[in-house]
Image (cartoon, rainbow, N blue to C red):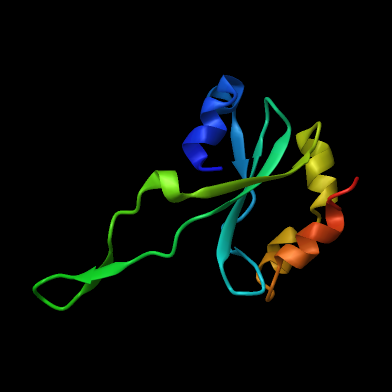
Length: 114
């Protein structure tokens, strides 16, 4: 789902405190993701932004073109009841996030069928 749909489906998400847990998570293809936790709902979610397109100005400098926020893809990874529990589950995330295909590390902590 896109980020606006994510927030529209549950107003508590929009009004809640949110904690970002890194924005350099990667999959096997090298796509980057941001990981966040919504305090009010306990939802841990990944958001993949579309690949940025770049333009140039008259001086030859590159700059990212604005992206459509509706293109951001959100996937709920897990429900985690408290921030303290989340911190325990993600101990070592700062280092793990920077490794190649770091979503594999994350998937080991939150198996799909748990």
